[in-house]
Length: 120
Image 1 (cartoon, rainbow, N blue to C red):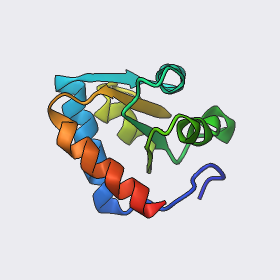
Image 2: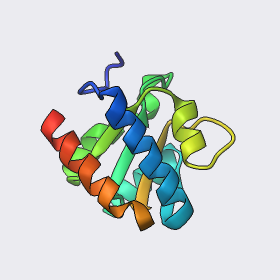
Image 3: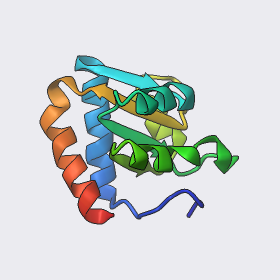
């Protein structure tokens, strides 16, 4: 487990989170990449943050959990960058992504947020 991963995410929660990201990508607004995700969190626009567990070097995303906590934005860890990137609509991996407007995934994001808070 990476240094910045603060809790274990069950496989079913990770699958639900990926599905919510795909729905939000198609019906809402998603920010892709560490820089865009960081900006969305700093501005308080993000509803849910996704952070890949396999980022190297770890310093690329190490600030995101702490920043999201500070802004009281839930975050979920996803096993690979490829999973995050493809769910966000990219052909390549992405170290991080954020849902800014969940669109039709609104209820799913609320459920994921509740589950994440219980895990932490």
